[in-house]
Length: 348
Picture 1 (cartoon, helix red, strand yellow):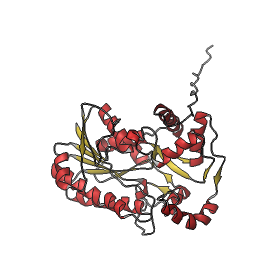
Picture 2 (cartoon, rainbow, N blue to C red):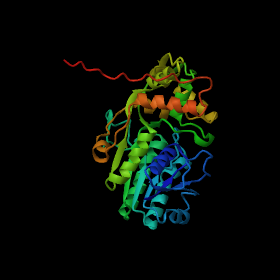
Picture 3 (cartoon, rainbow, N blue to C red):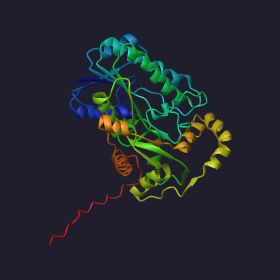
Picture 4 (cartoon, rainbow, N blue to C red):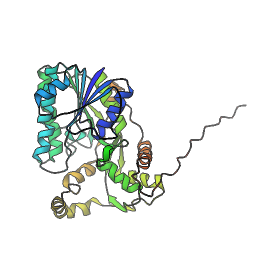
């Protein structure tokens, strides 16, 4: 099958392309940047530089393609960001209409768990939960929900499309071509190096990027037109994940978690200071995501797609090994993994 991946140079894109090539597909990789030096290499891979808002160029790029995986997104923790809003909303519609014009058989859109309102969901999110429509919700969340609405207008025009909603994505492979690591991976890398003495209180559902890639493929194969499928992993305390990364190298992990009540007391001062230095890490959006910590229900994806995520311990260990392989751990080194002991059954 001939497939196309937009946002091909990104974290999820790199892993998705690897799996698609392994599955034997011919892949058209589309991104606004040239392929990184260590991008996947295969005779079945064609790389195109393209602008998702150039309708004519996108239609040409997608002509002859059987399936499109749309991954382009602008992730931000800011309350307002006009560029992110445009990419995450009008950008979805632009690529979807190009796919429709090109006669693409199926369109898979990678949205986010943030398109669901985690603040008013009653502690649990499934595909029927409230959406991020409240103007007080951070711009990324609102834009991902608005992007889904843009896509549904094109579905009404005849496009066969499915939507997936991953939770917090982490794991290998990341940072290829010298690009920055994702936020979660960057913090885990620092923990594996032993340089995260404390962290914040809170939990989040984290999912291995390789499982997300497989879930996206499964949605393209088995998903129902117009339906959402949540691709979750495991709801874990973030400090436990960091301590796991530190244990993997024998380094000291975070000693304690800063209570939410302290963070809430200083956020009004810390957030604008962070903006002055070009950082959105200390923000109401970042705190809200881990403070709400809703339970994520992936029953629909399990039952309809055959989706099956791996345990977090496996992902953290694999991620630390990956960091070591690409030289991102400094002097830290992964400890040998314990070999499982086979069970012995006495007979007689």
